[in-house]
Amino acid sequence: MSEDAVIWHDLECGTYAADLPLWRELAFAHAAGPILEVGAGTGRVALDLATRGQRVIALERDEALAHELKRRARDLPIDVLCADACDFALEQRVSLCIVPMQTVQLLDDRGAFFRCARAALVPGGVLALALLGEGVQPFSVELEADVLERGGVRYTSTPTALRQTTATVVIERRRRAEGEAVEYASLDVVTLQQLDAATVLAETVPSGFALHGVSSIPPTTEHVGSAVLLLSAVAP
Ligand SMILES: C[S@@+](CC[C@H](N)C(=O)[O-])C[C@H]1O[C@@H](n2cnc3c(N)ncnc32)[C@H](O)[C@@H]1O
Image 1 (cartoon, protein in one colour):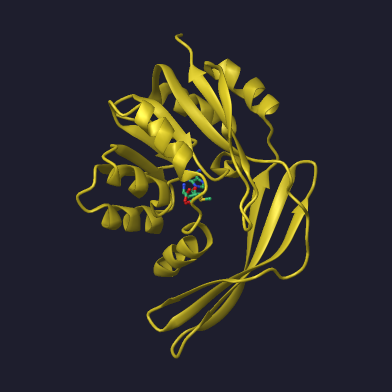
Image 2 (tube, protein in one colour):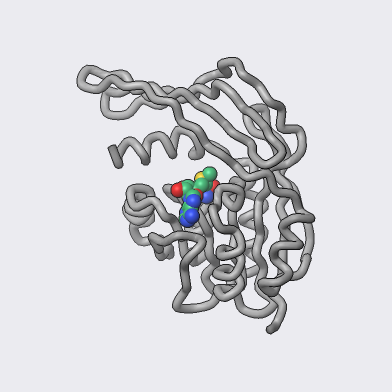
């Protein structure tokens, strides 16, 4: 099943590219030392940056994804850290921590994450958080499936619904794997916490952050846009 975790991750996250120019620009401005990516998955962003010479510490909780990222990194300057974003410590502090693809909205204990991130950053270091942008529309119809063929198996992931409450955004997908020796279907449900810039600011100030700036990632035909909140680590 762990191989399948990698395949579903690649299928559902791997082709998104609209955010890469922003992460490259931020990494370039902090190129002197390693940067930290939180929730790195199989390395969509970390591999892109490391290919351009950036040292990356890639933190990922899921063992199968972390293992695959390590395998894909080969000789690239990536250190993979398999750990929980809400409970980690780095051996060396960094000047940039990026959190792509609304991963911050998946975390169970954001306060703990902000404390870990602050401890991981040098004073003046930057924490960059991608938040779900405006224009998220609820739906409950089947959208076009993402498809990937691997090892004689056809994997399809079909978005079937997006529901919003005041506290959450819930995204449902039907996953289907079909091959000679494999056949299964399952429902994947991802719950994002609703989170806006003002709430993040109120939550991060006590951990030692101040507003540094706001950037954005434009929507694509398949993905909503993101607001990217840039916070700077203030000296204690
Ligand atoms: C939406 S994916 C983003 C993957 C990658 N950053 C990208 O942009 O393609 C979110 C990732 O965060 C990881 N993740 C979720 N909760 C986590 C946690 N508490 N600690 C570390 N990683 C976590 C998931 O396993 C998943 O790989």
